[in-house]
Image (cartoon, rainbow, N blue to C red):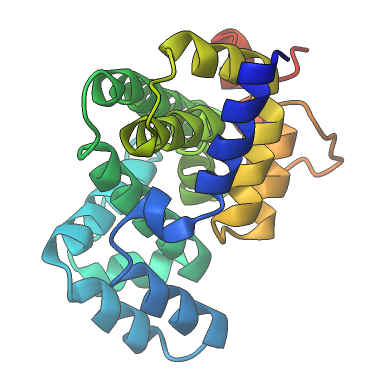
Length: 242
């Protein structure tokens, strides 16, 4: 790593550790996390999600997308039904990615275009992973766990590029895109783990991400990470190739 790359790497990591700066709007996520940690009445969670109609609609759409193709003939028609079926961990993961995408839409060019390319890749991987699960027999894996995990497939790249955009906007000197490209290529694992640890995501998500990218092995035949690993391998997206 060159001196310039090390300088940018250090500053990007500092931005990643600032949850509010990276994710932006926290009005829903903070009380949602508190309600989930408290493990209280699901009605509290429903009320919080319902307070943002756009998030509520997104939750319903994501929930139905996950079960589509699984032989389920009745979709969730109400937010309450969807949230009860999802489980609180998946609710938070979906909400997190919703507000992350909202934050990405605010980035200036050329970062917005680049990060949207990563986001399109993420959505495509998630669709393939859920479809792959629906064609598997003899497993007991939640399609929402597969979908929420897959939405973090290239999480490190997205967060690093977002942090780099903020760095260049605030710095007196402009750093070339080639610097962050080099860091993403060579420090992807470190940046990704940093993002998971700094942004308050659940430990199980990080563990399954490690399984998905072949960074950790598991004996759990019902691991959503193993489902995603197959898709990432076919797309040459594994951090540690098979």
